[in-house]
Amino acid sequence: MTIRLCGPRGFCAGVDRAIQIVVLALKSYGAPVYVRHEIVHNRYVVEGLEAKGAVFVEELDEIPAEHRVQPVVFSAHGVPKSVPEDAASRNLFYLDATCPLVSKVHKQAMRHNRLGRHVILIGHAGHPEVIGTMGQLPEGSVSLIETIEDADAYAPADPDNLGYVTQTTLSVDDTAGVITRLHERFPNLTAPAADSICYATTNRQEVVKQAAPGCDLFIIVGAPNSSNSKRLVEVALRAGAKKSILVQRAAELDWDEIGAISTLGLSAGASAPEVIVNEIIEAFRARFDARVELAETVQENEHFLVNRELRSIELTTADMAFVNG
Image 1 (cartoon, rainbow, N blue to C red):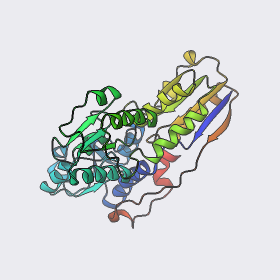
Image 2: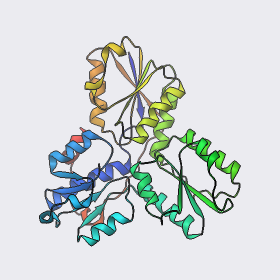
Image 3: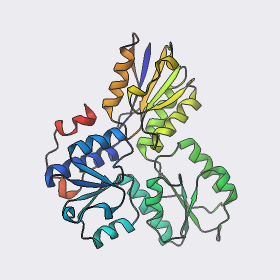
């Protein structure tokens, strides 16, 4: 059996940075370090950080009074402006782990708003990144569009004064269709200064497209609440894989259902750690005479600096071994 292992895959620079921020905060300030919402959408990562002393909360009022001198970290997906304001009102010390590429989308949306445009946000309702982006602007100044049908039904007050941004983790092809329809309906629609879909999302989708044709099964390692991981499953099927599934751990694999296959595609969403990719490969090697063939399109070398307060703290290979192996 051949395993077509996609590259790039797994952690992007924004996810890597967010996890590093929590690890370094624990080294610098000691446990507990509080994290508002999942730092990234991956249960394995969350549990690994919990084992180190991180405590995950949904809202800031869950932090006990006696621990308010400890830092609280905001997730990589970004938060509404109301969250840091709430933290300041409670005298909490916070570290913002928002991905710089998400922050860029926030700035693009604010620029549209500052120039008097109503903002269209293309994204998925309820996703933390969408909530965070909409929360950068006054209520009523952003309209969410999810599908081409939404674009057809949209009736703005001023059709000639619109600007759009997108969630960073969308399907490139699906988003292109929505943007095309919006431009057809609103010719004066203003695009953001730079593409909102992040490089990592685009890169992972492109290599899956290339690797998928001829695959009997395509496995995407990722969580069910990870937008970019779910998009990879869809991309693999559209590109020609006979079947594609989303898996969090090797223990979830149904070997009877997998059966006798000759070509397996394998990739991982941007919040899925490499240790689980290796776990999946070893599970197949235990059952098949499997050889790994690298399907690589580009090499990523992006690196985002952690918060200034943490840059003097040494981050070792051992500190990150729980996700990197």
